[in-house]
Length: 254
Image 1 (cartoon, helix red, strand yellow):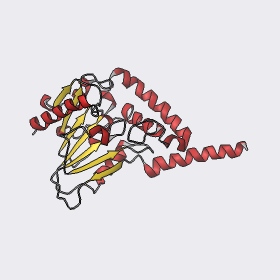
Image 2 (image 1 turned 60 degrees about the vertical axis):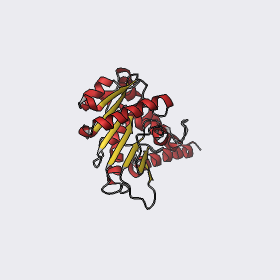
Image 3 (image 1 turned 120 degrees about the horizontal axis):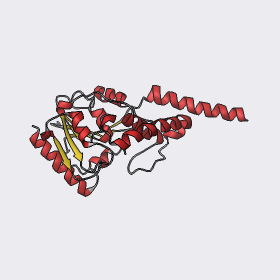
């Protein structure tokens, strides 16, 4: 009996590992909203932050609208920024010859950095690489990432169940582990810097704003700092500040 249980546990671990790493590979889920028969003149791609809620996170950003709206969500099976970049660069759902504007929040900016056919990136509290984290989170996130990746591996298919509470989304332990790994361990190349406009929060709990500025090394007129916490775009009061900041960036960065 014990051997049967051991075999079942091993099959659970190995089969899930093979599916996540070699079949699914951390690809994102893409939702494309474009009226049928319409001829879009603008397109926005929205990349989720850590809580995986692009619809909720961007719903109050009135300046972030377009004829075509594409939402990229993380998958409960896990996430890999490099694979997601490849997926979106190969995605044929964007309307040809229509300028693409990318809006990213927090860790979603790791994907935004690699999108080749974009006119402008509006990065809200961007976390493109571990060096922009504040001291406490820079020390803590790699440790948590390694521990959670090990736990996720041992749990197998249980780790991809949507067991973590979140509004209007699916969120699993596997996704959390992969996000922390991308945030705390995996470094990203400095790409699309010249196309970037940045919104920072003065009370950010996770990022060191001075290091974010140093990472992007762009003109100050393309960086706006607002008085709120990290990624609170769905909050009614904070969303007003984000909207004002984005509108200012849209005006000044032309």
